[in-house]
Amino acid sequence: MAAYRYGTGLPQVAYFCMEYGLTAALPVYSGGLGILAGDYIKAAEDLGRPLVAIGILWRQGYTEQLIDPTGYPHDTFVNYDCSGLKDTGVTVPVRVRGEDVTCKVWLCDRYGNAPLFLLDAGYPGSPHAWMTGRLYGGSRQDRVAAEMILGIGGVRALRALGIDADVYHFNEGHSAFAGLELIREKMNGGLVFEQAWQETRREIVFTTHTPVAAGNEVHDHASLQEMGANNGLTYDQMRLLGGDPFSMTVAALRLAYMANGVSKLHGRTVHRMWGQLDGVPLIFSITNGVHPGTWQDARIKQAFETKGDLWAIHMDNKRRLLRYIKDRKLGNLSPDSLLIGFARRAADYKRGDLIFRSPDVIEPYLATGKIQIVFSSKAHPQDELGKQIIANLVKYGRRYPHSVVFIENYNMDIARLMVQGCDLWLNNPRRPQEASGTSGMKAAMNGVLNLSVEDGWVGEGVQHGINGWLLNFHPGEALSPGKQDEKDLQSLYKVLLQEVVPIYYNNRKHWVEMMTLSIDMSRWQFSAHRMCREYYDLMYTPVANNNKNLSLQTV
Ligand SMILES: *Cc1c(COP(=O)(O)O)cnc(C)c1O
Image (cartoon, rainbow, N blue to C red; front, side, top):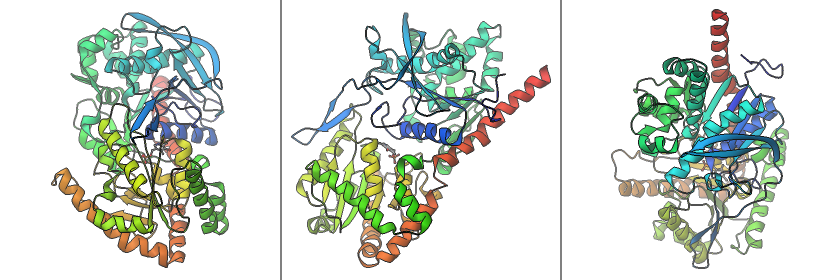
């Protein structure tokens, strides 16, 4: 066992994820999952933790989504510049649908002890470029091909690079096929399937992010066999792992020694969804966090620590965001009026346009500019409903250019500007659908106050009227979506108009106190450093120690 790298006394971890959001210039991410994985790498670097990350070099990223002249989002796909990556010279074969696919392995070595290796079937001359072309693009078979490259190819890349891992961390079910490769290796070494599975389970931990059962990816066994994703396992063996149809989440759970959800609330939801299934391991929760060095303005941090002038620095960040908006001719907002930020995936349940639904109530505030809102978002290229939400936001921006703005092509740079430059961060999804959510943590660390539903991480940190505001939304079970929206809208207006707006305009001192408490609440509890320590302490170390003890016993 090749444990305990770099003299740290800590297990070497191989971290698998479909996407990584490290910088806007390397757009191999679509949203929250990728940003989380990117922040995790950075936290592991800061803390000197031995981590190797495995992902895919999406040659065309996710989508560059621009608003066309009619106000509708339009996807473009460009081959971006990936010349900053290093060619390891290593290639690995993965057999996909009867063809041998040769993947190159690239290295992003900016993060010291936490290097990121990216597998690529899209280099010039490759006949299989489609497999790693667009993140979450294409057909179901494209998705399976990419997951095979990530999982099966990822394990092979580690072997080819000579990297031994004590623990394999699957961040979301996309990497479940890595478990099949770990099983196959052991079967090639002479173990029967059951033994190989049990041994493999002692090496894997799994983080699930999906809060609704229907959101979990399933595949039919025939198509997995056709693609070769079963990796030599029989139908019966595959069914034991993932059920029928084959669920990536269930398979990852049954391949893991421990599993977790990404907030306390979500941990309980995961337990409810999967806890009763056979062969599912211990499930608990490790709440997500964000990388302070990436998201928190250094001057805000300093002002907090030295009791400096938070408001002055906040206003500076706000003006920077407003200048960005003005320079791009997206609108002309005032630094002296309340600025609400809303930047999220354009999914129906997130209800980006909820705030507009009672025009009689909200439009007078927009007309006078007393409430300003800046939005940014992308919809999945195949999600027409999401695109209609964006088109609706754009429409409001055109109607109220002095109080509503939509920034196209949401990415990490825009996110940073917004979570530092808004006054208030709005989050109003239908409940319970948010596993964690992280943009509100970024906002909180910058003294941007959360106005949020108590879903995901929020209930662990936000206290109403103290360091932000909670929306007393009614859980969906008993109410139809339409009824729920109606009730939620009333409670949104009530808190916004009767609590937030008066404090903002009439009691600046109180507002700044709340900013201070927001930073204090978030800076450690919702940092990726706290999260990274918890993964090492609560998951990786127990797994590695367990294996060490067992192998000592069997010597
Ligand atoms: C932080 C971030 C997200 C995730 O935010 P949520 O609150 O989970 O929606 C998505 N995209 C970008 C670019 C981000 O920076």
